[in-house]
Structure formats: C-alpha cells, structure tokens
Length: 101
Image (cartoon, rainbow, N blue to C red):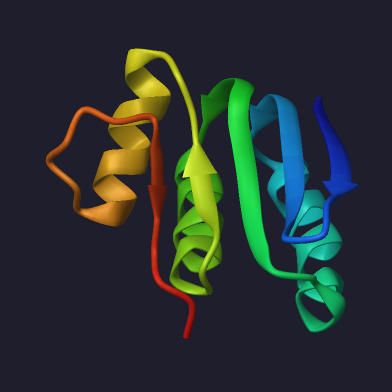
C-alpha cells in the first residue's frame, strides 16, 4: 500500500509518500504526479521518509520526477542510497534537488 498526501505553499508543492513504492502503487503515484506537473506552483518536493520499500519501477519513476526538477527527500540507508543512485551524488545527504529545466 502507498499513501500519497499533497500540500502546497506559495513556493512549492510537497508529495509525502508512506508505504511501499512497488507494483500497482508506482502507477498510482505516476497518475497522481503527471497531471499536477502542468499546474504545479514552484518546486516539487517528494518526501520519501515514510517509504519502506522502493522497487525498480519505483526507482525509475523517481528518476523521471527528479529529471523534471523534483527534490527527493529521504532517510534510512536504503532510501538515501537510492536517492544517491538517481542523482549521481556521492554526498551522504538526505535531500538532493536538480535544477529546473
């Protein structure tokens, strides 16, 4: 199961994810995210601190989101490792943002 919660501020939109980013839940996140890119205000922050598992298709979607300018926030060694793989950052950080296109 994956719980997706969104919140907006004047400068950003935050997606908070809780649960497993796997199987049908990856498609659920994609269907939630794609329409919001057209009307999104400011930057997108994807909060992965509540995610317990990320499978390969989930990683691919997060990569696409990051390439579109999303900031990925996570904790825990596995989630941070996946974020570092996506961003190519060797830094042991929990938050990486790619510049907007």
